[in-house]
Image (tube, rainbow, N blue to C red):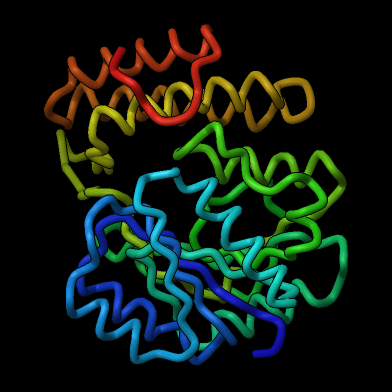
Length: 284
């Protein structure tokens, strides 16, 4: 499809990456692999990447975070004269015709800055396709077709957040600048959230994410930053995010292990937010 590139942000990927790339490679003109791993790629992945002419692999040699990796991909795509960039996580798999379905919507209006597919975690959801296209406030990073000119006009992704809520902040900044964001409910992306699984307690299903404690730190620090930044512009978003935080805390305390360490990291995330400490986590 003309004018569309895709990016996978990598961090120590396994062989499943090959299947996920193959799901989208025929739907786009180029794929950027931006690798935040400190380790070398597996030989099987190296051989696959070297055999595919559509792929540009860029190893950063250190973890610069998802926001900076996405900004690097945006710059590459802009330099290569692409108009749109599809953002994907390494554990995401596109459905057939997903990109064409997203493009059909975003190409209708220059004020549409981002369109996203409907996300399905096979361990949690049953596919329920409908033909609607709905306006949204935010979405996760993977499965988004982004208008590059719009992303550049608002300054790209906020690198100081490093990881977590990078997607929320970017979406809200687009909205605050008058752009539209839409979800295409008949366009499907298969994506597993962290190490999530269903736990049933007293007849009720819970879906804890089992993020590691450092991810809990980022989620706490960055959500406080984003909520404070947009509380006057998008108060409904902030109320919803507070509900998500309380549910996440409940899931940790009821369903997960390392609960006290995770609560400690929440407190640390709060303290670093108050002290305006951003970027990658530092233990001291």
